Structures are given as C-alpha cells and as structure tokens.
Image (cartoon, rainbow, N blue to C red; front, side):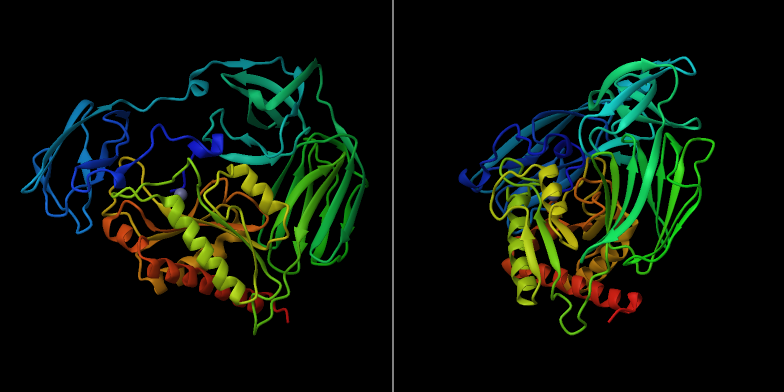
Length: 496
Ligand SMILES: [Zn+2]
C-alpha cells in the first residue's frame, strides 16, 4: 500500500487500534476493513474484508459471499448517499455471528484553502520570505494535493505577493505564480520591489561518480529543473545578472555541453545541459550561496557481472506501528515487505551487488529519513517494496496484480523493465507502470521506483504473498529485472 498522504505527513503514524485477529477464536467472524463499525466516506462503494470459518455460509446484506479455504473474504458493497447499514452474517454448524457496520456517505469536501478568498497585494508589494526546511514544494495551486513544480532547499529566498487560506502566492516571474504552505516559510519584511540576485561565477567540476555545475550567487534564489531528451534544463528566478552574457562551456566528464543565455526580461536565466549518456540521477542544493547541481555519471557496467560495483538501496515499506495494508486474515504488509527485501538482499549480494537497507527489522523509520539515507549514500538505484491495497470506490477483483511506480522521467525505463520481468516470472496480472508522486518515488537521485508485488486485499494474491516460495520468486524476479535494466543500459549508452 502506497499510503498516499497519511504517512507522508507524519512519517510513522499510529493505527487507532491494534489488530489481534489470530489470537481470537479462529472460527469467529472478523472484519479487518472498514476499520471501524461507524465510518464516513465519499466514495460510491467500499469493500468488506475479513475472515471467518472456511466452511461458513457468509452473507453480506443477504447476498452470498465466497469464503476462501483460509477463511478470507473480500466483498464490494455499493453505497447510497447518507446512512448505509451493512449486515454481515456468518454461519456454520457450530457458530452463528452477525455484525452490523454503518457507513455514512457524504459529498467530497473542497479544501478550505481552495474556498478561501484571494488576498492580492499591491503590484509592487512583496513580502520577502525564506524557506524553513529542505525539500519544500512549490505547488501549482493552493492545495496540498496540487502538482509540485519544484522543491527548494532551506533558506531559499521567496517573493510573496498574495495569500489564499493556508497558502502564500510566490512570484517566480511576472507571468508565473506558484504556491507555498504558509507554515513552511518565515516572513521577514514587506518591500516595494522584488529583490534580485546576481551570479558572479559558474564552474564545472567532477569526481569519480559525479559532475558538478556550481553557480555562485549573491543570495539563494528559487530554481526549477526539468529533465529533457538530452539532459536537463535549469531555470533560475529573480536574477538581475549572470556571470557573463552568453556562456558556452565545453565537455567536462559526462556533461557534453552547458549553455547559459543572458538574463531574460522576466529576470530568469536558463541553463541547457546536454549529457553524453542518459540521465542517471541529479540533485540540486545550496552550499552557502553557491547553487550546486550534482549530476550522476553513467556507471561502468560489466557485461559479464552487471552487479559488480553497483549499490542498490532497498526499502521495506512501513514498519512498527505502521502495518501498511492488512490482509483478510490479519497478516500485515510490513512483514511481507521486509521478508521480500531480505530475500532480495541475499540474491543481489550473491551477484556481487552492494546492498543497503532502510530498515532490517520491524522498526519505525520516518519516510523522509529513508529518503535522506538514500541520498546520503552513493546508491545508483533505490527500490521501495510494497504489497498493494485499494482506496474505497475500487474493485479488488478487477484491479490487482503487479505494478511499478516512478515519478521522474529518468526512472521510467527502470520501472517498465521491472514490471515486464516481474509479471512474466511471477505470472501476476500486469497492473501497470504509473507516474505517481510518492515520497519514495520523488527522489531524483538515486533512480527511484516503488514496486507493488501483488495485492493484500485480493484473496488469491494474498494467499500467494503468504507463501515463502512465492516471496523468494518475487525477490529473484526483481533481481532479474534489475539485471536486464543494467545490461540494456550498457547497450544504449555504448560504454564498455
Ligand atoms: Zn505499502
């Protein structure tokens, strides 16, 4: 389960109550979802997930429901507006259990910040503010789910020219306004014109693994980086002047060329970066007032031993109080993820890879700590391993199988190759490759993808996930997918 937004905010959240299913009477009717007998939602349907005696006759609102041989059941229930009463009735020769769940269907809520009135500042009035934390997103709309346009490091200076609800409007250019959450910046003072920076020097350098493009600035300004066919473009905002008028830099390491045009009338400057090989990852940050763009060099892949000198970071999704998805008989996703990760670690190390783990046991590691661990390493690839669940409104009998998620364009091929190889080897349904903004897919370095091996709430797939042999095969299929990706990369890069 990707844990879309909840875990994203809090790191490790505490579940409202502890499941104790396996310690109770094995024949008693147990519901694992919905989590409470009284719930509220806006979806048009939900599902009832649980377990009972394998030989029980089960009815939900008088409809017969299939009970699998391990006692699991999963049933989709349509919801009407307002109060819905759901009666679950389970009966065999010795036991008769009845439970009633109430689900209140309410219309979807429009976020408060979207409904609030816009406070427009005078045309030349700006609040001069700074970003409080690394990785602060600027968004297209004043809403926590709106598209992220760029992420900025701590202390980046912003020019605020409006407010709506919990969000400030930030002026990047006269034509482009974006939004930042009000509690993620510190406001300094109101000024009568935009503060503009100047660049004094641009330099290229390299070491064994990376190329660096460093821009010395008078203060920290916002920027945006976009992946292109040939490399990257980087836009710098609120700039008064460049280090020189038009600059063309020649080859340095894997950078084929760097072109910087003079500052445009809208006070932006664009860097066009062309690479010799495909993009293997990048990250931008400030060192004092110097903006550093760090670009990963193409790895030297040995055709005979593709994992030699390759570092892979493995992340077992969830942990401790965050159980992830719960299967019909109460098994937890966090345990399945960890077991697959350990098996994957073994098969990758057997091939000569260096493997790092975000967690090696049932501990709580907040999501952004996991990202930091990966970014502080020199890992080439990161894989976050999960088993899936669905949100209310979907049908687990229709939507199931293996899926792989990426966020950045540089990771698309990795995601597709993994999906192809895993579904072929495991025989699971192809549930697709998707672009998804998740904490574990957003890093631009290492190359980052999130794999959902199969669904915890699909009774057949759940049975497979509980089999040791299936989890071993899943680990081997991920290794095979990685191997294929590395070998394909040798061919397309033409190195060796
Ligand atoms: Zn998960």
